[in-house]
Length: 411
Ligand SMILES: Nc1ncnc2c1ncn2[C@@H]1O[C@H](COP(=O)(O)OP(=O)(O)O)[C@@H](O)[C@H]1O
Ligand SMILES: [Mg+2]
Image (cartoon, rainbow, N blue to C red):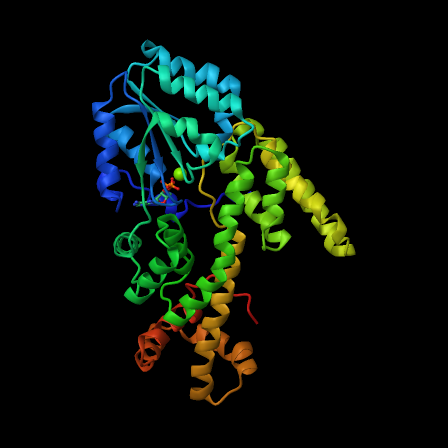
């Protein structure tokens, strides 16, 4: 099984308050609230659109002020035994922990109106806890959350301004050692609509497999990405859904090909699931895999809902999930790389076809091998490189002929 590398969203998750850009008022407000907290104080609720740093603000503030953070998402918040055995002791029996404790309920808008047990628990806890309680929600205005709203200190966060997003993206480019065109950074920032997570995901998609990207290419890739942006949301909703139906509905709304969706689930589930539930989860993925092969081989499309059911089961069979940001499956990344390689190859070919007065087929079949062979000679290599006038050609020559590029199975 291939393990996905750390996504850039994870890799560049802020570790200090300074690295969290934008929302200065909310940052200050929250820190002040936490520093001044006393036992009679209310709980706080950070709210605002996705990807603006609600979760990461709580995490960084806690570590900055030396709190031990007990962090839960919606799917844990609805587990009575978890609330009783982990949260209650933490809230009432401070001696259990040597350090200060901060309890964080993330994504409480993930609780549905039927989940009155969890909501009542929160209400009671807010009244009586002896440690600070923080909550976060994208949409705090749902009617069933109104009792909670009345009892907490509300701190709004807003979409991140383009300028701030661009600045953060530029820092990431610098750290990755890539040259990003300002125009492209602006494009990413504007498309993100203030969602920093989405912007970083776009940046990674554009640059993680390529050294350079033209504005045209970026536009093309990012417009295809609209569909893929969706996939991150769909997976998040399905993975943390409270019921089987919701997970299925979410997955089947994806515009990805079923085979690709499977890839997403397969590569991410080892991160989502603690080890003890990984085996049953992967068994469902394997069943989904067999099913989709049958379906497409025999055109049994009416069975497709069963495929989504299997994938949903893979999520639902994990009672307690790690909080993860989903990352691009390597196999799909590889596919992008392969397409990129073919494009590079064409570009280099077009140059040599003119130079050598030869056709594409002949070039691919024969000249590439000859060039590779001759280029083992240092002298030939340097003469060749000095004849290639522009840097783009030299780069292509380097990668395709001298062989830094990995995809050689092209002919
Ligand atoms: N204000 C920000 N500054 C820097 N990075 C951010 C910011 N907001 C989000 N990110 C990036 O996006 C990721 C997700 O942010 P998160 O805090 O989970 O957003 P939210 O909880 O508001 O949906 C973070 O790990 C980080 O990489
Ligand atoms: Mg969050």
